[in-house]
Structures are given as C-alpha cells and as structure tokens.
Image (cartoon, rainbow, N blue to C red; front, side, top):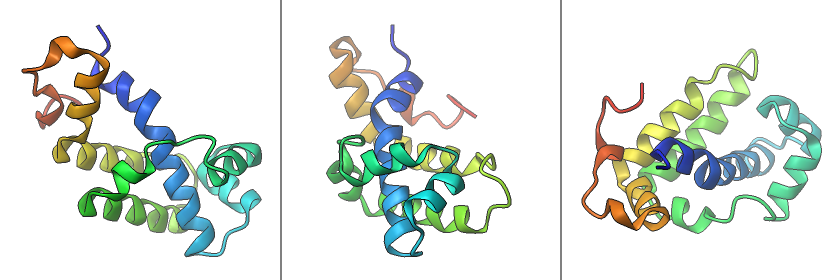
Length: 127
C-alpha cells in the first residue's frame, strides 16, 4: 500500500517546491542560483520549476487560500532561514495540505480502495 506520505512526496512536494521557488523569484527577487541555494536544490531544478516541467499540480494548490498562504509563508520563512535544513517549513505546508483534504483526494485517486479512508486528516498521523 502507498501511504499518504509517499503520495505527498511524489505528487505534491514537487509542486510545493515549484510554488516556493516562484515566490522567491517573483516576490523576493531572488535569481535562480540564489533560489536553488536557499531551497537546497540545484539551479537546473529551479529552471524546471520555472518552466513548469516539475510541479504539475500548481492550480490545485493555488485554489485553496489556506494552502497557498502556507506556501507563500514558507517562502518568506526561507528568506530568513540561516540554513536550508530548517525543515519545519515543509512540515507546516504538509499539515495544511492534509487539513484541507487535498491530500485525501489525491491519495484516493492513487489508490481507489481508500474511498472511506480519512487518515490524511488525522492530526497525529505524521508528526
């Protein structure tokens, strides 16, 4: 069985990273190299995010004001982070995506047998 964390890592986090990268470049005027360094990824990865070759679920995440606000806040927090591994930033975004029910929807699409599952919404499922 694919746990919801796997769905998050494979299908959602690339989009979260793409939106954070976009926010860093558009709002905070970082270039691709600075964005890559701040996010702990490569500059070619940032280029792919910018060209929308990675992170295909942007419209879904942008459609929820709370989730999109969390992503924008994550970018702002990254601008102030001393190192790229202050990872509570992505954990916070993950919790907001789970609370919104978006992850449940994606998890059910990936595994139709989970039609009655609500583990993604459980506060203690992943801490």
